[in-house]
Length: 616
Image (cartoon, rainbow, N blue to C red; front, side):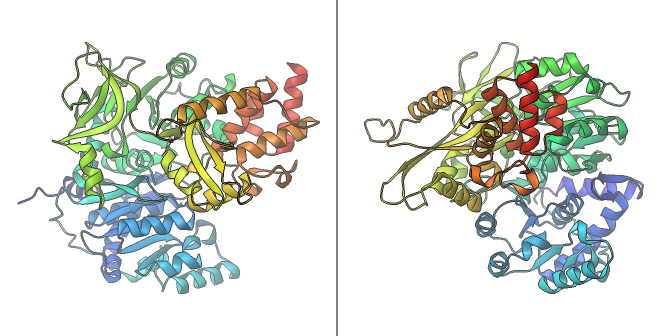
C-alpha cells in the first residue's frame, strides 16, 4: 500500500492546534489560520461541484497573495495539483500552459477571465477571484462584481464560499507521491516543461527549512518573491504554515520601495528575510540610515536564493549591516533548495554553496561515474526533495532522472572538506534578477516573425541583475522589420522577464563548419558594439530617453519627461534596475541612494543625471 501524504497529516494537525486568530499571511489583505481552515473545507465542497477530483490538475493564475495561498493549500488537501502560472503572462503563454498541463479547470483573477480569447479557450470549470480593489462598496463596484459573477457562471471567490458547506470528512488516503503542484521552468513558448512536485517533496523540503533556518511558531518571514515560483510559494505561505508561523508581504516589491521594505523588518519584527542577490546588491546602494535595518532583537538571517551570490555582496552585507547571510543552491526540480551555505558553521564557507541537507549530492563525469575530488563535473542530487518528473514528458524526464539521481545541468567541484562550488553551467540558461530565462525559448519566438532569417539569444553580465537577456537578429532582407515590432511580438508571447533587454540587427553571424552561429563570437561582437557606443542625443533628456528606450524596449518617440512605470510598457522592477545601471555606465556617475529610491519619471532621471555630473 502506498505511503499516505505526510503533508496532509501535518496540515490537518496544524489547523486543529494553532489559534484561529493567528495570522498566516500578512499582505495587501490578511489571512488567519482560522480563515484558512474554514475556507479549505468549503472549497472542498466547491471543488466537488466543479467536478475537480483527486489526481486532477487545476491552473492557478492570480496576483492575490492570500487567495493563491488558500487555493494551493486547498487543492493539495484534496489531492488536486495546482499548476502555477504567472498572472502577468500574456494570453498566448497562459493558453499554452493550459494545454500543456491538461488542466481540469482554472482558478484565476476576474480580469484574466474577462479576456475573450482566454474565456473561449478554457472549456472547463473556472473559479474567479474577485479583484481586491473591487471589494469596497459603491454602485459601480457592485455592478462590476455582478458582471464578473455572470462571466464566471457565479463561481466568484470569496463571495461564493458562503454557498458551500464545510466538508467534515476530508480524504485521508492521498498518496505521498501524489502531485501537489506543477511549476513551469522553461519552454513556455513551445514545449512547456512543467516540474511535478509531490506531497512528499514539499513536506521534505519544508522540514529542512524548519531545521536549517530554525523556523518555529514565533518566526515572522519577510518574502515578497512571486508565488508562481517555488521560492515565493514554498519559502512563503507553505513553510510558514508548516512551521506555524507568519509570512509578510505587505506590498508588491519595486525599487523605489526598497527602503520601505527594510523598514518592514523593524515594524513587523521580522526574523527571516528571503530574497535574491539582485535585491541585496540594491540594498548596498542605500544610505547609512538603513544600516540598522537588520540589527533588531528579533532578526536572525538573510536568506539569499534563486541565483549565484557574489562573494563581494555577501561579505559587504554581513559587515555593513551586521547580520548573517545564508546562501543556498537549488532548482525547481529540487522544490527550492538542496545545498546550504550556513547558517551553522558546519555548512558555511563563503564562496561555496555549502553542503547538501535533506538530500545527498555528488559530482559526476561525462561517463556518469563519480568524478575525482576537486575535478569539475555535473552536480547530481538524490533524495525526497527531487521532483517526480516533467509532466507528460517522459523523454525529458529520463534525461535528467537517472538511477535515482537528478542531473542538475550545473558544473560543480567538491573540495576535501565536503563543500560544493558551482563553477559553470552545462545547460543554457540566463539568470536575470533571480529569474531563469532559457535562450532557446526567446529565439523560438523571434523566429516566428516574418522577416527574421536567423536569431540567437544569450546572457550578458550586469552589475546588479547578474545577467541581461540579449538577442541578435539576421533579417532576410525581404521584409522590413523593426526592433519595436520584435519587442511587441515577444511581449505578446512571453512573461516580462523573458523579453530581451536588448536586440541587435546584424548582416550575418560568425558561423562554424556546419553553418551554425557561433554564439560566443556573436556575444563578443555585441560586447564590442556596446563598448564603443557613445551617448546619442544633443542634450541630457534626449540621452536619457535613448537609454530608457533601450532598457524598456520601447521607441524613444513614445517616451517623454513624464514617462513613468505606470504609463510605460516594459518599465518594471528589473528594467528599472537596468535603467539605473545603464545611466551610471553611460554618464560615468554613481547615483545617490536617495535618487535611486525616488526616481519615478524620466524627468527625475534627467534631473539626477545633471546633479551627479555637476557635483561629481
